Length: 239
Ligand code: NAD
Image 1 (cartoon, rainbow, N blue to C red):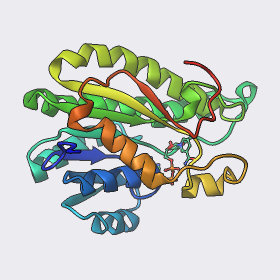
Image 2: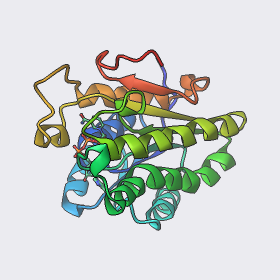
Image 3: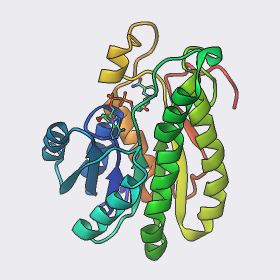
């Protein structure tokens, strides 16, 4: 199957490790030129060197409001455009719903809601100019079924899902799709450090990256406004 990604320019944020890295790798394997971002320069450059195709490493914190525009400009300066956005960020710490305070909520909203919205807004001018765009927001299975110990994540990510569902309808006629990829437990550093492995199905980040890559492909042009569970059938709800 030709995914139509050869020569396309893809920005993947929070991509030195884990699901972001796997998504960038899958896109690069399909011939996309990738722009990578993470805060740690050394880890990021190591990841960029592991890409089979052209890759640009831009050290940046996605929660900084200035970052999205800077990343979009870097993509245009280096590769001449921006066709694909995979917006990812580190997840918030565990918290029970009745224990959260304003500071923790605001940090979660910056990382897991506002940064993605800003990234979409920064990428759109280039996608609109090309009449073609693919946007995938990496979130969590929690958008369909809140996880009791992850109240911060549940709150920020369901807000993002509501925003994305609204925006996808506004963008569809412009040739731009917008979807969520919603991971269940995957074998990444984060999952290992959080002790998440071992009590249920565990996904391979490389497979997850390929699912993201498909959502960003040319033949997925009619797939928009979806929140795709990638969770080994662990979500029990019907929606
Ligand atoms: P990870 O810790 O393995 O990788 C996170 C990546 O994000 C790293 O490259 C890190 O440097 C980068 N990063 C973190 N904060 C950043 C920031 N402020 N600015 C720029 N880069 C930043 O994590 P992961 O497991 O790949 O998770 C990715 C996302 O998916 C997280 O939001 C996580 O909550 C969510 N998620 C993961 C799982 C899982 O099982 N792995 C399940 C559900 C949801």
